[in-house]
Image 1 (cartoon, rainbow, N blue to C red):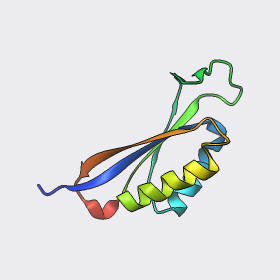
Image 2 (cartoon, rainbow, N blue to C red):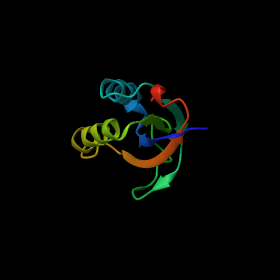
Image 3 (cartoon, one colour):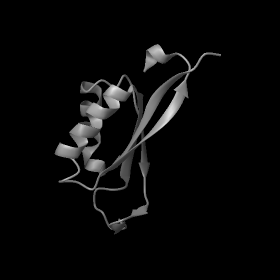
Image 4 (cartoon, rainbow, N blue to C red):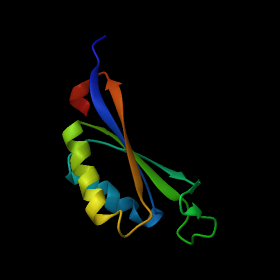
Length: 99
């Protein structure tokens, strides 16, 4: 089977940002995404009493160019203002035209 390399971009952010994140990643070129609600602990500690509920984890498989555009947008519009993190991992996909 022929596989093509794409990038798996994962974003974890405050739940109140869910709709905005979806709109932004789609506008910047993502064809699809998956969202899950998550809890956890990180550099700023555990968020046990957050009134907005658990964080959201948005995952999307995209080209490198789209990943870079989304990360640049996060760096300017999200990271300075919200509890948001993101990471990128290379993945091999079948049916690359879907991403």
